[in-house]
Image 1 (cartoon, one colour):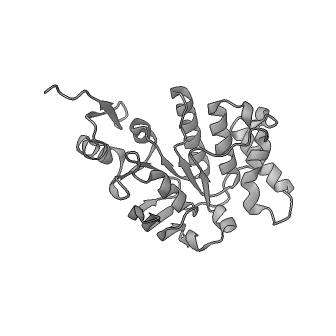
Image 2 (cartoon, one colour):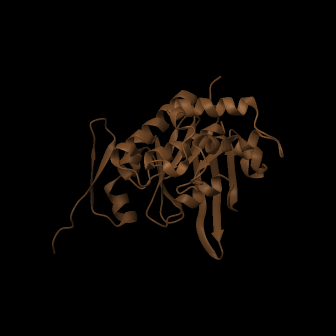
Image 3 (cartoon, helix red, strand yellow):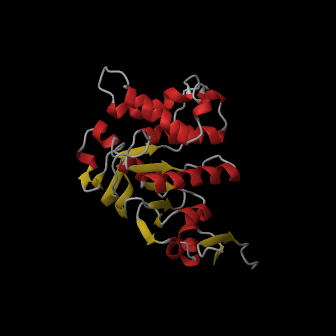
Length: 267
């Protein structure tokens, strides 16, 4: 049996807001991602990108609605919600002595009864996901003995074993070199296409965001100030205004925008 997704659906966010103490971090954020599409959230540091993903995953209190295939995810208890939305944080806790297999198996928690044990089906799904991510040979290896690229694949494996139709990835290329960044994003894209996963990521690298996402949402700060295809969001005026950067944007060979930093003119 495949370790793929058993159901599918898009995700919609309506009027989402987050208060942390007395500080408004997000206000009236809305976005919509169709089944099998990839949306990337960009924005300057402190704009609320990670907070938005955590709110969508139901990990922090928020106002507004999060709907997966029309189901109001915020009204669900954690276990059924985890069957709809899988979330991989930017800096997950990886117990150094835990094996790759046992860590990936944690993704099956929403399907394992309280005080119960994993079933043959849970083990089958986990083994299938590890195989698809070329991690079978690492199954018994301890997490503390993995490279950065291997750790990112293991974090992705845990999310995929949830078999949720929506995958939220917070900065999946953090601390990776160029080659491993490309490997991870190409892997996500292949899995998205094969399983019709709906993918929402945050990325600080604007060129990677423009190369892989179908749609971009620009947060600055705490509000969605622009959304649409990469060429409509990665524009020189928007990037200058919200990132405070001097840039030149030009189309790449495939027509997608490429962002180049430029030196300010001497005064």
